[in-house]
Amino acid sequence: MKFSTTIIAILVLTVTACGEDDEIVVPGSNLDTTFGTNGQVTTQMDTNGTQSHIQRILIDSSDNIYAIGFLGDSRDSLAVAKYSADGALDTSFATNGKLVADFGDRFEASDAVFHSDGRLIIVGTSQNSSLQSYDDIAIAVVNTDGSLDTNIDTDGRLTFNIETLMTSGNASFDRGFGISRSTVDGAFYISGESSATESEPNSIVIKLDSNLNVVSGYGVNGVAFSDFISNNEETSFDMVETSGQAIVAGNVETDSGDLDFMVGKLTSAGTIDADFNTDGVLTVDQSGNDEWIEKILLTDSEANAIAIGWTSSGTGDAVDTDLLLVKFDIATGTLDTNFGNSGITTLELNNTNSRVGIRNNNLDGVIDENGKIVITSQNGLDEFQHMTTFRFNVDGNIDTTYGANGILGVPRGANIEVGSGKAIAIQSTGKIIAGGQIGANNDRHFNLVRLNN
Image (cartoon, rainbow, N blue to C red; front, side, top):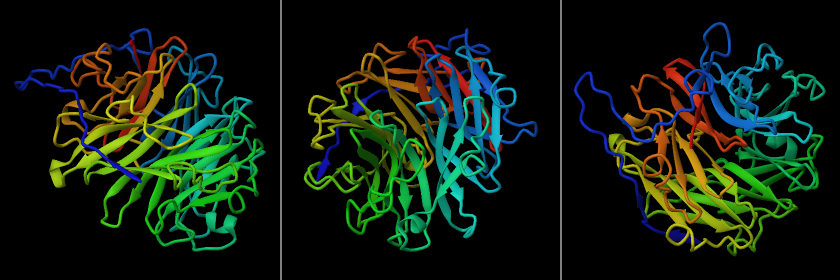
């Protein structure tokens, strides 16, 4: 079932024309200068100046900050840094607060969660050791002291080749994107894509028990291979789990070649839940635009979820990419008509070259203690290549009390350059930590900022 809409919640971001020496002034800049140096922390992850990118931020019960990403021009190695609540590297973690793990082949981190014992469980994609033109889904396990957990396959990393797990199929391109831990039994659910059963990738979920063993009774030998829309390419960029049921979010490629927003639901057995929107899948088509989801969040009640992504139109240098939020009931798959306009909010950034790349972890989101949705994004706007955050009210409308008209960020040229944002988390104090990278070309490094909200 598809819902088509052209609803737009407009936020006009005006930039005054400037002379050569003028600064572009963006309203709503509010760095917390008690964090790091003038509100930001930049970390070079090795002594060679190799580029590094933050993909995910986790915050523990003591407000310590974990920045998780990759190191290397080809996203070769796992990189993790741990900071105190105020942004100082925790020198008791790994080597002077930084872990760089080279597994001998590529490991591109995408997402992470805490184990119940405090270890980091990091999901990503590794190069297949036998068929190096193919990729495998992988997890890395990091102990609380920053060392790799060598009890896990001797080197702290597990790889999953979907063809091997299913004992049939094609030599496959497998990629891991999202991970969620069940609060019921501590099991882990990993979302991604695989071409093991078809020439084009389809959405998959792998289930691991709390000891990180594949749960063979889930799906087929631990893999739920979900062809939600038959014979169409599907990708699940993120997922959540509730009561043993996985909800995946991403996109599906239509017969015409367009991308549509897709949310699918699986039963606790790893089969498609036909009670969810009658056929197990919810899609949204914004009048022929491309849409894809990169983040899905459960509300406090876990009765509803909010999927966050992009809607994009145009071609070439006239691509217009806007934020897309969709709220739905996780039991039935119906849109929440009290959210936005009939369950959908689109935030127009008022720029015709706001292109972002699919599969690049271009945004992240979190729900704060008041139920408001806070998003950071690498939005591609010429004026906004910096840490930018947006906040939406519970009803899906932009929160005009946040920053300036709902946007809070750091302007280019405002005496400090903070790079672009890809990850976000909120400390117990309510302060927002946004992260990504700073620099240009191959000279990019981990970067965090803290914003007063």
